[in-house]
Length: 387
Image (cartoon, rainbow, N blue to C red; front, side):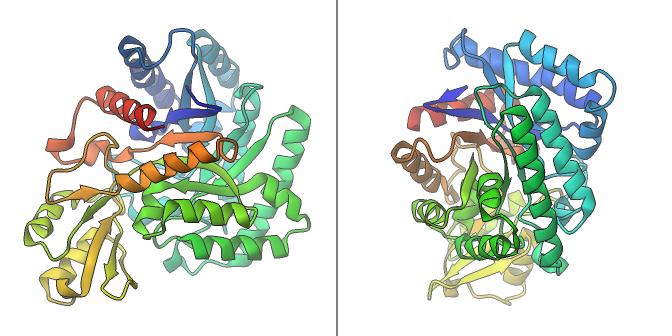
């Protein structure tokens, strides 16, 4: 759907699907249910097409490009009055029902398999994207810090992709762009590291303009909140350094006071084995202390390795529905998401792709769970009410 001049969707990574057959079934059931609910509520006008923020695994992308699947999918989009303007290309393989954790960063951008997969996603967009929208793919921030990635290989593959996207854009008339998504403990994770990465990437590229046209940032509000980076300042700095803001994820993280014993007890309900839940604590001197996962933080608390009195705030990488604050003494970083929406009003032309991304629905504590269509519809209503 439209958000002013921009496009707004929710990311279908909330729904388990790995093969193309599973993905198509998910689109037919879950996505159309959300569309129909939004129409019934009056949130989506009957004449307005429904935008899909598509998640495709590498397996599903390969299968979709075989035979007549792509043509049939294009016909389905027309028949259902839906369209795809963006694809989430971060999770390469299984994303639900198994231990994902740091494996979500594999293969990283040092691996030709990541490049090949991302090219496939853009080939799919070239066939299905509407002529009045640009088309984006979001991806990981190069690698994961502990992998010790070879930055030269990351640069090489991104530079190759920029050339590929320039050629594809020229041949199709579409504006294609990739959004690298900074994330805690990613190869680059905050504003300063992102600017540094793009500076080095541009220094290696034969065409700085091609990088600036085709390679940008997927700005996840949750991730920048975790880094204690004020979103308005972060977005303005990215603009100042000519880094394209490819897409913005409207998302919210958990937050709590580490000096509150009740909050420390309550946060344990979010310790689950599927996804990475990095913990970032702001110390009394405003330095940031990082834990790779929630169990690591809890162990440090239980063993006395850290003292709560040394910290002012803790934030956890656990996406919380935008319209549903966790019960006190926990809270969320929703104020930072509101700041992103405030920035959008002041800069309506800077970014045209927005996506709701609360993929953790299946592992939320019971008190926060609702029927998935109702949850997604509630988030749309919250975004539109505050846009």
